[in-house]
Image (tube, rainbow, N blue to C red; front, side, top):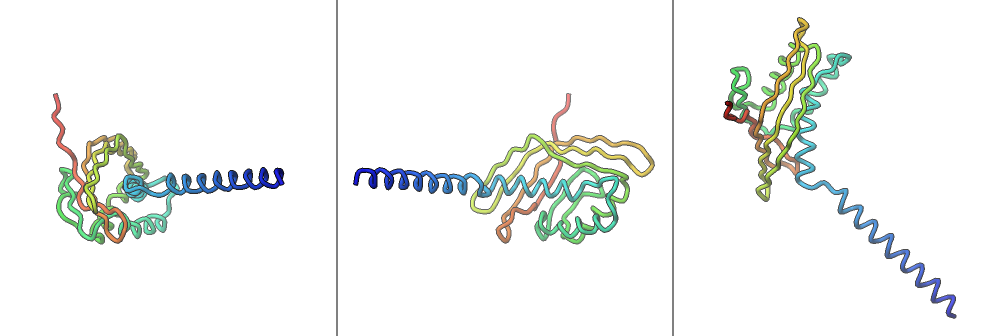
Length: 171
């Protein structure tokens, strides 16, 4: 009788540990709003980047993903005529295609991301954006800019509504 209770207690303890482990794993692996925002910005970098072995079809597939990153209308201000104003998803995709055509390779990335969420469906991010590229004529471009990006949750996905270069005072 004592042996039966001991086995039952061990099995119940083991079951409790497995249940707590499963609940912990679910909690830690679920996508928080900040994780979803980071994923949106990583997707933007993936779409904007162009690799040397990338074919034209790959670029077209990337442009189809623009609708997963941007809101139906997005305001852009990069202090450059080509990227200033409010654009639709189709206009953004077309502009990205034209821009990517100027580069042999282009790597876009971000670092130092700061996310501020305003529940239920707004967020603002500040980060440093980097562009390392080689133009078709062989010249290299290395740019670093501080950016501010505003996002809104649309259809349960964080999408960019505004993106702009932040004016930073220089000495």
